[in-house]
Image (spheres, one colour):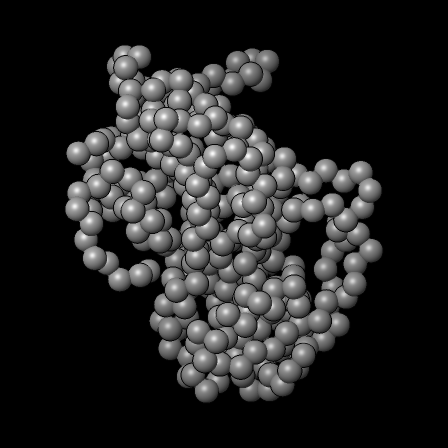
Length: 333
């Protein structure tokens, strides 16, 4: 059976390790290749794949795992991805659990650069390997960005819903007391999807109109009766935490018994913002480990944060993509 070469960005090593372990358990032959990275005094980057010869990767499938959280990581995946084809890799699979800039998916004012589109086009320009490229994402902030790719490649968006729902079930909240909530009306479809899956009512936060995208979010009240309910606020992306804290305060002011936060992508990198969430009236915050910040000791050591592992979501998909032994029937994740 064909060998799969696994590489990663250092910030995503935690996820790469668990994915490799699960793929090995499924019978896939996995070989990890380290990437030497360093910087010259003038800031230029140096990369070298730790291989024995120019033919070490010839005809193999490569799996590159990296949450893209900043500009450096976008360049990193472009440079390493391009090199893999030059070294003879026949297929490249890029697992990208988090993709930055997705809120900049369209221009709202004259002259604005649609950064999400620019970044996706850069990924599409990596160049096709013999058997093509595969890009695997998780809960994209706006799914339309998948269509910004140019050139032949397979794009897959996975869903963290069932993993997050299991975490909600583990809290053992009485079903009759549960209600789904939102941080604004823009996430109404997501919130309704979760509410239907659990079989509970839904309420929404009305957001104040903003003059510009850079203006902070404000709220104007709650739509729906939340009195004596435990409200589960879902937002697919938490950056600073201010929006979900505002929403929690609105729900509590409207009579909610308590508030739980839930997100796919937790991206707060500022320690002050994390501590503000810890001190907030939100009882629990459930998140996936799609972003490297979820490995921060403050988050790991605080009982308020419940971190859900997404390894299984990716490995089930990868088992269908990668060279594998005969397929084993598995129930959907």
